[in-house]
Image 1 (spheres, helix red, strand yellow):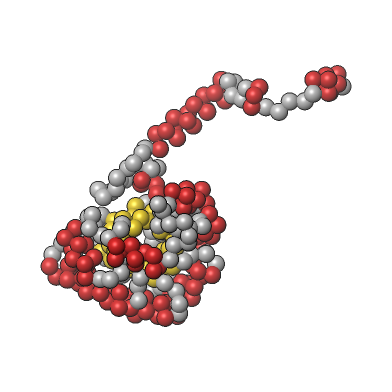
Image 2 (cartoon, rainbow, N blue to C red):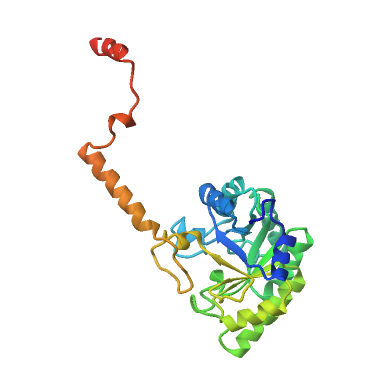
Length: 281
């Protein structure tokens, strides 16, 4: 049975201890967030991936704080049970520790989130600690960090050699020490994800990191087949709604053009006598 009360950090950590998998899915609006909450998804991530799947940007880089807060507000209005994590966009936490704390606070105060997520390894541990010290929970994100895709030479698997893998292991431990309550691990070898998951006491959430993580996350639009630009290797499409939606819209177009829609049952009608008087006038 899914948890019926509001999910907390201690609940998520307890799931790791019990070996129970944690579920995470992105959401960017009220209806999708409401559905995720109703089916019992543990954590809802308002990801900066909204830049690509909702706003039409070529990457996550252009996403602004205002855009993130706007979508977080919509999600938080829908969610009653799931734990909400807001994704800190590019340059919202890199400028200074003070700016990072200020922006993280906006996710909680204005966006209605329960926590924030930021990308980076050991190099951002001091920022994580500063935010956590102010009472704001932080979910870390290592491996393929989309905001740094250019520096990483594109969207490629990270930690494939021993040196790189050891840095990610160190990063995970440093981020846990800094106070992160959870770590998202993206596009890293499954054996590395398994090692990190065993060596940290906080939950690990995989996306393209194999089955041994404490949980898994996918983008809402990828699960439902709503984003057609590209489908990453690690994505499983559970349904292709794009084709069904296009079929429905095509049918609507044809019925309007042919006069088949709307039919009398789709219209509002006056009392026949009143209609007669109106027509006589």
